[in-house]
Image (cartoon, rainbow, N blue to C red):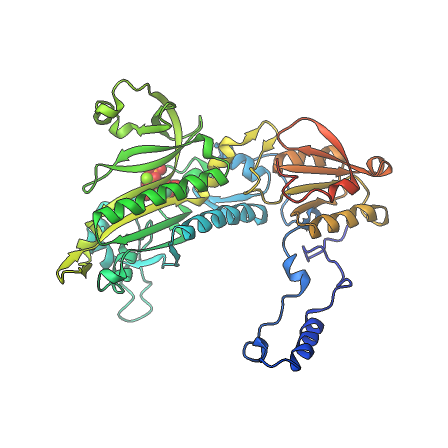
Length: 480
Ligand code: ATP
Ligand code: MG
């Protein structure tokens, strides 16, 4: 069968007015009115209707990837096995992955959720360089102490710059502190917070856990700047609420616990977010009663504190998906970052930093949400909301399925339409492996009854639904 290059629904313009016509008639109406139209100042044509639909749905026959039966033995982790078999990611070398169309959709969903929640607490998005000069790392002494740094040199082709030593950022305090510092003069410029979602590089000793431990991976890192410790404390609490919402929306809320960890020189604790699963690399001590945990590094010193005395703790394996720190003045001292206080004196800026690994989060999701058949994506992160499986032969016969596909997309669903010419058994197997939360099957038999068969990925039962009824349901209704 021909593979259509265009992944859109390929629909014709339809009866709606084109954007040009609409703008023209609006223009005519406005001529008689007194005030000039905004379009006389700005060139902002309305979006054509179909632009809105582009990329929402696609035909499976057009997907560049296919599912695989076997995965290399170098891929021992469950998350990488399932994600590779289903065609979400592909390993280039240990700890380094390509994100394929389905995987990129999931990652984009995760990063959208993170972006929304960080923006909601007033942080502003930036994008900082991955390539960083050694000088910045010498200022903090971390060129010598961070053992996972990739270190490189220019290739010598440019005079002067050729021998400059560089690193690929494993984190960004060394860049963000002098950068934001250059904009902070007085207390009026504080507090402020910036975040980015970016590729990070760490030369990890062991990279055998798939997406959980990459040498190249993605992280959201946020940095906040404050005039006092109290203000940092208050923001730190808001960050905790934002993190809680991220994990809820990603479908990991029930198994992700705020965990006390060592705080470094400045504060007693930092906090990790640990997702409980049997394949986690970390050991935590969980109190289900408190809904909190203690990291193994600080177990002894912490369990004797009055607030933990007598609390029952269960040793549990978990994945560190996030880590937040009060940095105090550690980095502002290194870069001489200070501000003029209200009383005219100069004071150091207090900083916090807040990490959340988006690719590790994707791996953790698969570790938590899978069964023997494949992945079970939570609704908000799934690559598509509906897997629409047609058992018609592609061609003229499949016209009713094609039409329903379009109609579902226009009704607001994001649909992966399995229009391939393969056996029903293979389609169902792939569908379970891919893990899209809702499945609709249409066949000559169901069509005779004016129906499709609905099945949620996390239930065994299929239910007939009349096609007319489908459109009485909003896109929300079909989510599990
Ligand atoms: P770990 O102890 O697992 O090596 P870390 O404590 O060194 O991680 P942080 O510096 O706290 O990691 O980074 C913040 C977040 O970035 C982590 O909570 C995790 O979600 C993510 N992260 C860190 N290292 C990796 C990695 N190698 N691969 C994927 N994600 C990572
Ligand atoms: Mg950490």
